[in-house]
Length: 461
Picture (tube, rainbow, N blue to C red):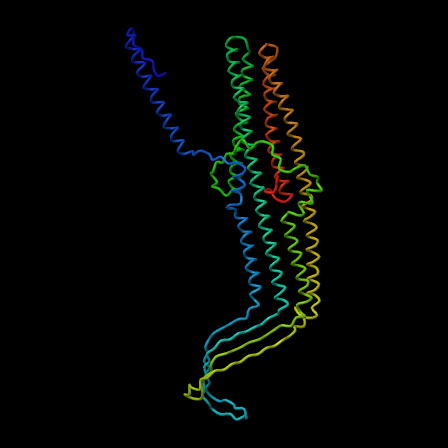
């Protein structure tokens, strides 16, 4: 290291000088490397590791889509309470003044000039009920609360499945990078051995160059895998509503096949889904609301409207400057009535609209059940296919490992060529990467099947 000083015959002094400058240079380089490393450590914090349990716990913690569904649910609750509150009478308190100047006509018909005033103080209680409409409207609002609750659960399950799938995508990308890095390390070691053999004259330089080409291809694949891993981390952070720059890293222990759903027939799974899926409960609530609206169109017009009022307080005043004569007064009235026409009796169009809503809700329910059945069958087919792919990948990995081992032995005994071993290593890496993808796909299919049946948390219980 460092510059060698030309000192003629003074060997001892020259060696001491060379040693001095070499040690100083090494010290400076080490100090610079330490400072760069420390700076990098400060600027690049350690990536947080997350596992599947943590991802599922964080998925709905701060998600605005779930929060929006909850806000709508709270709105339906407030609307339901408001519907029931319409049964309460309205109460008002106040005071008033009324004056008159000029001609006025008395009961007998005489017209004369007069100046008068009056003032009132009191309370008014008013009732304006349509009991039939109010009652069924409150019941419909109650069913809408149930539907809104199920919409919240649908949003939560969808976000949960999205988080799980993105977690397994990130996990697969991380494992894929590890496989390619391991292959690159092996090929580099092999290239170093070839370099020694070329220098010793026992191997061709073309073989070493072929290995270098393989190294370049491996480095490219590693960099592409790192990019896919970083993009997967950004997508997962978006779902979990974390800071976009959060460099998440998955727990490698999670890359094992999971068996969430027991071996059940498609018929049993579809039956369970029709019972447990929130979409079914939502359309059931919508059907119940439509049935209540239909009953409302038939029964509510038959129930009379009620109007009642009570005014209590005091009245005072008189002619000219007379402000006295203040005393108590009470007024009250009660009335019943039926509305005829639109919104009341003989409104056939209202009944037709209500009957159409009932039929529409029933058809929508059948469509939802059919879609759920399709989702269950498709998810089950993906699970079976992914399981078969894992078995096939295991066989491919075992075969490729044996092939790579034999190729390396043949090349060491001068019976094989370098290309044969490199191709065997390439096949082994491809088989390992295929197995990583198969395991990740199998786990995603398992969670998708659990979601299709009724809920990810219910799986395996």
